[in-house]
Image 1: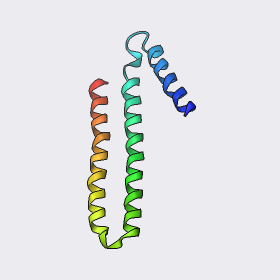
Image 2 (image 1 turned 90 degrees about the vertical axis):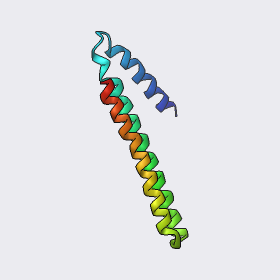
Image 3 (image 1 turned 90 degrees about the horizontal axis):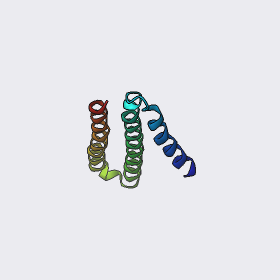
Image 4 (image 1 turned 30 degrees about the vertical axis):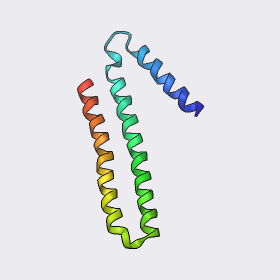
Amino acid sequence: MKKLLFLLVSMAFATVAMAQDGHSGVLFAPSIGMALGAGLCGLGQGKAISAACEGIARNPGAAGNIRTTMIIGLVLIESLALYTLAVAWIKG
């Protein structure tokens, strides 16, 4: 946890340091936002797939319903990454 906090604080200071001339850090912040958004979406998708596989293993009769719900959930999670990409393009 301390390493993650150190990484986030150092990235915040790096953004300020790179933006000294007003243009250097313009692409840095959207890039970090996209990286965080995509990474956390990947973690969410992995957890969703894991839970769906576990649910199908426990109750194979409900595999169709679980699969459908999982796919809808994955689409919503992926849309968050696409929204983050759109914001990164607009801000960049």
